[in-house]
Length: 233
Image (cartoon, rainbow, N blue to C red; front, side, top):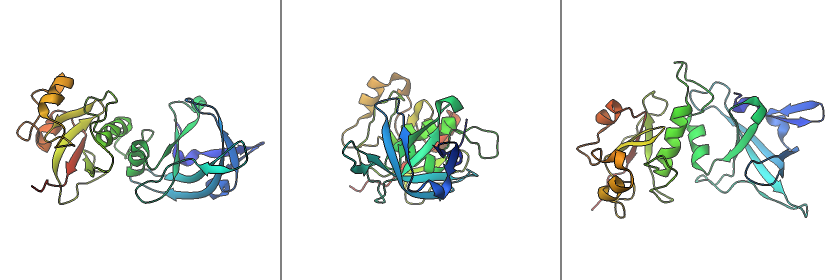
């Protein structure tokens, strides 16, 4: 599997990479829709831990049939529209793009790149999947989200890539399968433990602050941990 830092644009017999990609256009063959012509308006690089090469963050625009362009990504919470190229499972499959506004992009930028390891020999693919479930509050790991836009969570993990911030209380432990246990639902006003247990039977007996602490979540196999701001009555 390649790395984000290996991404290049092919122009004839040449490969253009790094800051040299700015101003170039290329064809993006999507698996879920028609091909797009994309033009690179800006190039940035960042180095989230533990990645050694860093991520390319591209400002991409889609060239429309009338020649006009529109942003490829929606705005993220910082007001940016950044696209991140990431490798698929094999070199033959090439790269896909995700946006900094979505869960996938956030997880990659936090350091959970499925193609890399933090020097421990532990591949981060499961951490990336756990992060994706965590952000979407996908308790069952089945694609169903139990949250809404704008909810703020603090994230940490068993490897120390992200460390907990003060001022948050424990919410849930996570693995690549979804939630391991839940101390409190993401949406306290609209989600009950009874409903979760009915919809996701494997979590029955692992719900509530007495059944789910960070220590218990670790023992049950959690690799990521979410926390929320304390609720004010």
